[in-house]
Length: 307
Image (cartoon, rainbow, N blue to C red; front, side, top):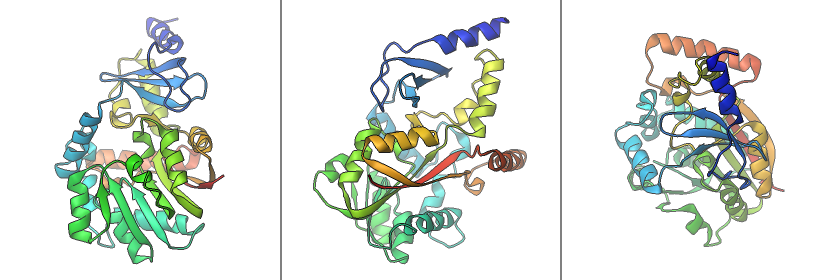
């Protein structure tokens, strides 16, 4: 076996000494990738893939403040990503995406009261309001919620969802768009969401799909280079994402919280929101076409109800 192959096999046999699985709490974990700022582990007990060590809560708040205000972050391609959160025009690709997600949600519940966790600038809630929903929101980013109140006139709060959930309010629908991967305790988050559901209520959520063509290609480059080529992986595994779900592990996490998945679909990232050079945009367009053919899309959309 080559030296690079021996290194990779050694990495695969390595077990985590300190990180606990955020889903099941198991201590046995297999090292998947060792990246410059953190490592990615696979739980031996439940197969959840997660990041360690985690940034502090203060570091995460500052990351999102920068993303919403300047677009600066660890992935330059995301510089324009959050800029779309301020424009409610019909041709905004983010508005169009929210319309599709609402189509999926409304298959299981007609418009009623809706809570958006991590509501950001309030754009999703503004779209939902036009469709007849009564919107409420909460987010930890003061700059974003200020925009939601001042620009869209929405009823949103700045703060932590756990404290908000303790008030006992119930909602017909609760949404978490790209939220669960940021959770330090995803089962407790999902359980708190379940407690806030009105009878017959629904939960809508999205998250990156770990079992994607991006991981297949970047992971292959990592392995054949003996762990030296980490750049492609760092476009997908980023420090504000603590958890990386597959369809199976996402359903498992929701089940642990008393939620049953009633719809699960795979999607690809909307490339119009990314800052990409033309050759890269063309390459990703082709790559995502292959992903659709092979079932390796890089995002998940799910709807769940109380089990």
